[in-house]
Amino acid sequence: MNNQDGVRYFVAEPVQSSVRQAIERMVRAPDVLHVAIMPDVHPGVGASNGVVVATRSLVYPAAVGGDIGCGFATVMCGGTGTALARRNNAEAILQALPSIVPIIRHRRRDDPPSLTDELDPNRLSTAMLATLAANEGRLELGSLGRGNHFLEFQHDSDDRIWIMVHSGSRAMGQHITAFHHKRATAAGGGLAWLDASTEVGQAYLRDMEWARRYAAASRRRMLDAAARLLSELLGLATDWTSYLNTDHNHVQVEEHYGEKLFVHRKGANSADVNAPNLIPGSMATHTYHVEGRAHRDALRSSSHGAGRRLSRGAARARSKRNDVERELADVWVDPKIVSRLSDETPSAYKDLDAVMRAQRELVRIVRKVKPVVCYKGI
Image (cartoon, rainbow, N blue to C red):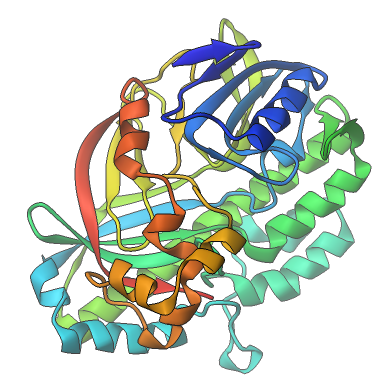
């Protein structure tokens, strides 16, 4: 760790100049007291990803990000990864998944899922958001999304199967963020704040919590569908006592340095003492199950992954189909989309093991899991 300009850095390599400039803007923003930089830090809109920000009374939607509640969920199943890797089983899984875990949304004629009481659209702060939730939100609940979101079937060192999903609040998080950003006070550089002591600030916090619940419910729905698929295809049971669901795009009240603060995490895991979490690399690379060490200067946080090394455009320009096929050789993916995965291959991301070494004070590793089958949207 090195420190500069009141910021705590936990990084494995020099920080990009654009990221450093964004961090400097964040440090100068009103009411920002503490900033911690995680080793997966990389550019983002308004605020960089992999950054933790603590304030006393102001909240910054950009320091949470548009995909509110984006996170991970995992559960262990019976059977072995060896059986899962057989061609007929892997192909059957990839063929069945699109109909039970849609990428974008459920079709209206297929009776999309209903919203539970905790996701009642009327809990949102405006009629406009409630209408969007009742329509678009309902259709997208339990859908994966594109970009770096994925659903994987993995195996650990004992060859036990794990299902893991990375997804967020889909369009609803974006709608909520855009609505409240318009009501916020500009602070420059894409940053704007809301006073948490006002009704406007409280409305954002309530809507943000709704989006977190929505994202968690969506991940659980996808895990349920994937677990049922393993049961139907391979007769495998699911150990729901192993279930874990966490998110890394949020703001919440926590006590740090002897006072209660609003802690914003954008692409950063909570890493309280012994708290379980997941840190994946990229498709075709491994994931670590970890426990937090509650590091004070990291604001009890850690990275949420390896972090991008190349922008999507740079990754697409650099990788050809043969490069993608080589990097994904050990993982089953849908061959029809391989040519369009160049921006999500391991070479587009930082070295996860270097990232883990940079945060050995922040988390302890519990287990390592490797992907067998990876389902992605494009």
